[in-house]
Structure formats: C-alpha cells, structure tokens
Length: 287
Image 1 (spheres, rainbow, N blue to C red):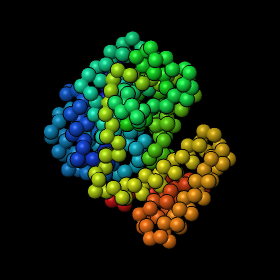
Image 2 (tube, rainbow, N blue to C red):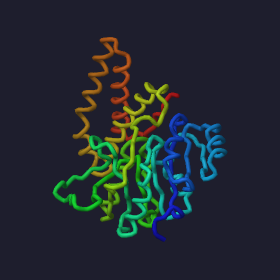
Image 3 (cartoon, rainbow, N blue to C red):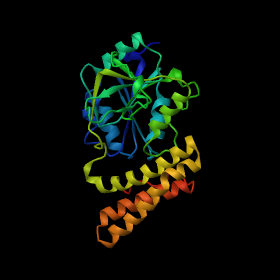
Image 4 (cartoon, rainbow, N blue to C red):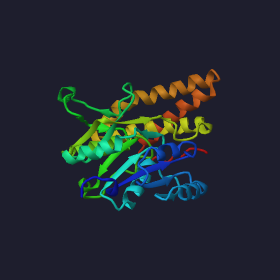
C-alpha cells in the first residue's frame, strides 16, 4: 500500500514534555494515528492525553533512550509507514499532505523528511554538494535529523531500525548511514516545512541536569559511532584530543569556582572515557 493517513502512524517519544506535547499533536492531521512512548513514566500524562484525544495511545515505560523508545513505537504500528517526530516540532498546515502527494510520484525511499523552516539550521547533511539538483522539489541526502523522519517500513525487512546502544544522539545518523550503505534512498522534501523548537522537549526547570546528561551522551555516542563504522583506532585518533581538552577544562573551571562549567566538562570527559572503555551508555538524567 502507498502512503496515506490510513497507512501512517506518528511516533512521538516524550520525556518531561507535558508543557509542549499538545502543540505538536495539534499540528498533526486530526484523525491520524499517534503512538506516544512516555520515557519519564508519567501515568497522569497518559491518562490526560488518552482522554483528550481518541486517536492516541500512550506507552509509559522506564527511560531506555530515544532509539529504544522509537523502536517500541515503530514495532507497535500496524501501518506500513511510521513518522518519527520529536514533541518540540510543529508541521505547517499542508506539510503532511505535500509529503503524501510527493510519494505518489516517488516512492523509492527508505527515509523521507520535511525540511526545517529555519534555513540557518538545516535538518539534513549532503556530503557531496555537487550532486544536489536544486531544480527538483526534493533533495537526495546522506542523513536527516531525528526530529522528523518518515520511515518506509517495507525497506526494513530485518526490522532493525535504531541501534539501541545509543541512548541519546547519533542514533539517527547511524540509521541513515546503514541505509546508505544498503544503497537505499533518503530524501528531504523542500516544499514540506516543519518548525523545530530545538531542545525544548524537556521542561526548562530541568535545564541543568539535562545539559549534563546531553554532554555525557554526546561524547559517548560520538566515540561509539566512529568505532562502529570506522574502527576503534579511527575513533581513538578522532577523539583523544577531545578527551584531554575536556579533562583540563574540567580542572580549570573547578579551580576558578565555576561549578556549572566544571561539571559540564566533567560529564564530557566521563562520557567519552566510558565509551573508550567499551562500557554501555549507562548515565541517566538525575531528575
């Protein structure tokens, strides 16, 4: 079956996102199928959303990370297409219909994304700029950001979506790289726009702890990603200076009594060091 609202499910992973999730939901087509995987174990949010919206199912679980939660949502879908989105995004009014219309004429993709409405922060990467044909209404890209990814499940015959070793960051880049190695197509539709508020999924009241967690996981994921795809020595050569730099910045800010910056660099050092040792991505936000 081709892409349609009847054959599409939206997957939204939430974590302390009560303040923003409804803006995202209300930007989606009214009768669309939506599965929310709630990573902060908020049973009240499940009760509230399922009573407010007849088309929403909320799965409450322990926080296992973005990729693992997305996998849960995708595997629960009964449709051929799953649209993975973050709770801090909003679609323009006609973006979903433009995506559906586009797939009528071009359905050879494994991943398709709308385009960010902020030209200063593109939601895709094209490594060979010369291959871009601006005359088309779409771009063939190497990867797209994880805040909006339409997944054609028929192209995933092994049901292997996100690598759950990533707790946070680069799970989308890993997925895209694997599909490109399989000679699959990844497109961004230039006529379908989405607004990403960026970093507003968790409430601002948890800002500091979320920042510490992000720094830990960013460094862990960068080393793991490079090790997975290019080998340990390649990852080590790319990241050893970052390890040394983060350690000395941690000491510097500690000596000059900047507790916040000291902890940020401590977390960067520890995330990278744990990844270099081959340890799992174990850190969880303390909230």
